[in-house]
Amino acid sequence: MELDLKDYLKIIKKRVWMILSIVVLATVATGVISYFFMQPIYQASTKLIVNKSNDQVGLSQVDINTVNLNIRLIDTYKEIIRTPRIMDKVVAEYPHLKMTAEQLVKTVKVSSVNNTQVMTLIVEDPSYARAASIANAVSIVFQDEIPKIMKVDNISLLNEAKDIENPVPVKPNKKLNVAIAFVVSLMIALGVAFLLEYLNDQLTTEEEVEQYLGLPTLAMITKMRPEDLQNNHSKQANEQRVGGRSDVKLNQ
Image 1 (spheres, one colour):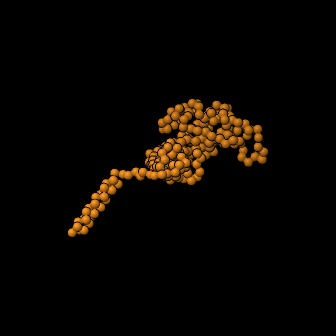
Image 2 (cartoon, rainbow, N blue to C red):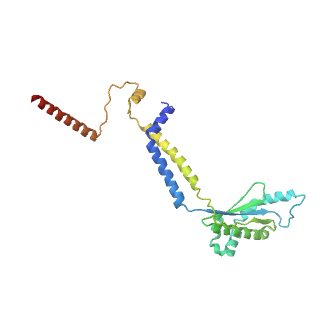
Image 3 (cartoon, one colour):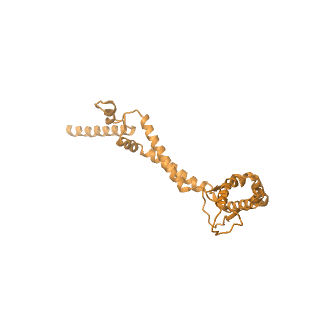
């Protein structure tokens, strides 16, 4: 049987406390974990430009073939920068980083924008100062080593990772985590409510009997709690006492 909007609202109203409990519990738990238990991760980055170091700035004519060649070389450089040839050199020249070449490869990410000569080297670490040191070290070593590997001098460092007094972590995004937890838990709670209603084959009201069976309700047996029975017995006993006293007065 198809349900209309009123039926859906009725199901939600029937199980509103269960839905609210799931949503509140999931949202609060996510907020506590995000704000108090998850370790913040900071990001530092440097930018490298693929261009001849002896090119003059402000030339009236630009060699488009050279620019296109530099753009195509970026994919090659992105692979070279993550090879042991570069990372082993970083480990040897910067021992204070206390990282192996394998760890550096997993830590360093290189990205570029299409049709540009700029590469961005990104490092994430629980310490911003450490992330900046790693990004600068890898960039400097790569700039020094690429002429020996490719026999060209076309890498320049645009900007280093700067020291920041109060860096802002990039992970975790606490507010986003809480918002996602709220939305997901709400969807799950609604799904559970509708599933329980679908599995429930009991008829509890006159309207449901008439709706699903098409039969009128002749009588209803109410469900009584133990305290209701006790209250009923007490009421009957009080009525009997009052009635007995009235009979005594009439006899007198």
